[in-house]
Length: 319
Ligand code: NAD
Ligand code: AKB
Image (cartoon, rainbow, N blue to C red; front, side):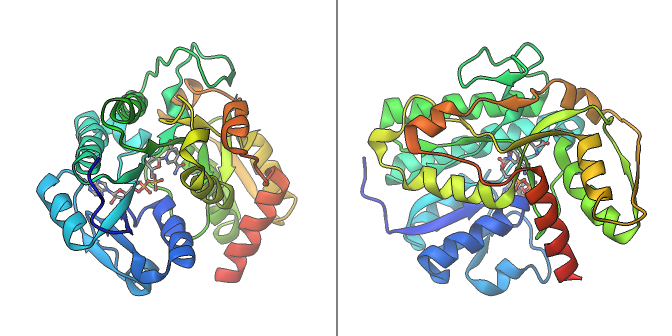
């Protein structure tokens, strides 16, 4: 493996839901100048643009990424750029191009320059045949285009490690719930939208039914898990390196609406399932994360009650 050009961190797709929190956490840890946020778009007044370096970069531009890694002395890439499930079903070709093509760009750049890589997977890798609590190892037969791209991403991460020694690691994130930035076109977006609607309109039209149960996680757990995985010694990372199951919490859309009603007077929720219902139905209720616990000591800290309190408190503070 080549010696990396430096030890700075490049984050792709940084202006999205996860990047908004992850870049801040990485800058707190390594210093603002050491973490370069990048995205294919600019978002006016986005806090990341003021807190440290930002560069426009498409993950489909291999030459641009190669130059950036050399010129900015990068040693590690957190690769967050992707098209999520709901947008991906509307634009499957774009989803495949960005998710698979973008991951190839990142892994090839990492191979060339000896970089470490974080490349997230998703609970969308599972299909309807997976057990309701999905184990780490089970046949992966997703029915969404997005899920298929995530299976490919996991396999590529493992292959680049085995064939070229690229230290690529990933997590099968559950639906993530956060307050700093809006979700980016996924099926689990209802679990974030409902908080904004509860506080602003006292009402939410939920696009999945009340009995829809999915694996979910509060953003602070997700960011901590990401950093813990990337800081774990190489010897502790096993063959699940392309996509570790991490369990946070599991609740139905009805449970979430009830938990919010207990805190927000007069809140009502109507359930009006649309096409995203079938994507949600194809995913498991929960995941078994014993492999991540055993390999690198993962443990979630937020349950439904604590997450709801935190979301409402943070959003109230913000307004
Ligand atoms: P997001 O949609 O909020 O953000 C993705 C970002 O990628 C956007 O800012 C977008 O502008 C950028 N992007 C799109 N095409 C690009 C391109 N060609 N080049 C560079 N940037 C491009 O997504 P997110 O929720 O932050 O997800 C980040 C990663 O985590 C993705 O791989 C996603 O599949 C995975 N994930 C997210 C969740 C979740 O609930 N948020 C759950 C499971 C997995
Ligand atoms: C989506 O709903 O597409 C994402 C995910 C679970 O991967 N939040």
